[in-house]
Length: 195
Image (cartoon, rainbow, N blue to C red; front, side, top):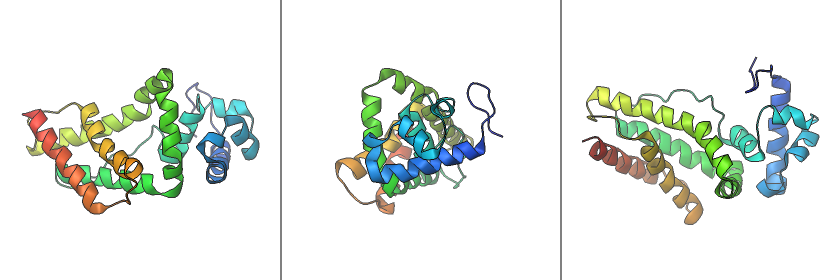
């Protein structure tokens, strides 16, 4: 059984009810219309059950719509560019799907206005993403593609920035060709950074 950050046992039934409620509400009321109290009422659970799991609406939404801190290791494609391509394709097509696409702009707005929230994301969700990217970079060093491991945070920004701009600033549809170009460019930058 999962354990919450405060050490109390978590009920999978409650987790599932909250997820179902959130995914039902988001398409109808949008990110701005979602509140923890509303999700709790829709899920038939108390607000404390949600606050035991997440400290804010943004953290709840990110964990249930995008990913929690428990992320599996990335598959080995055989090359750094291939590994990055898998990451960027997942991001591009994942963010373009209806609920993430609806949700991400409001979530970014909440992050932009709350330095404490940014810090919590950096220590949880983003930390796990950087850790996984670090593993890809270390794998590339072992293959001989990189001389050393460049800063995973910089690589993280290079991978997600173009995807966000492609989808949300230019309003373009997801594209395997674009994802692979972004991955190729980031792999080349990683090689230059490791020299």
